[in-house]
Image 1 (tube, rainbow, N blue to C red):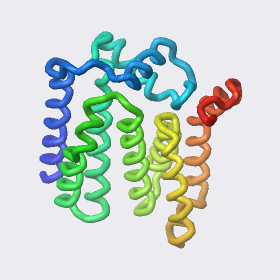
Image 2: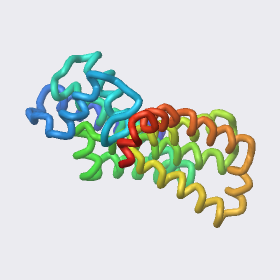
Image 3: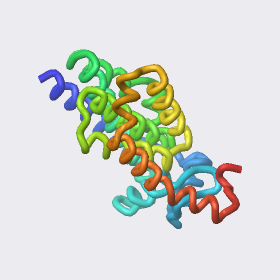
Length: 219
């Protein structure tokens, strides 16, 4: 019941944000948002200063509801809603349903998250992918299953397509393996290799794009 109530509360927060964004948020796109919208007119596997996921999601949301400011930003509250659910799950798995409830609610209402849910940027998708990967990791360290390896690899790969800061999650995995013997044994396995391969394959198109464009984003 606690988890169901938590999901309901987080859903209401997300619904209010989406409704406000679509109908009552009279703020023009700021320069970075306008640039991302421009990229979305020509979807590609990479762009000058960012990886491509931000343009892909804008292309998807504007296809659904048009090129208004609210539709350009629509993915952000949805990504933050998903991230809050994963944070809820992490709190539940590591501690209790009550901790998960408050973790999800506090995350969803943080000032930074609230601002991020009202603009379209690479941060919302990064937080969604990061929290998904963290939840998969928590589940894997408890009891490995193919679905969690799949989620871990996909979340890391998509996270790298969202923002290169996702590389710090990979660094964290290495540090975890250095200092935690049980985690090292679990991650250095066939499942871990599958997740790593999936992450690389998901991110590979952006590497190829950069190689074909003089590594513009890296530069």
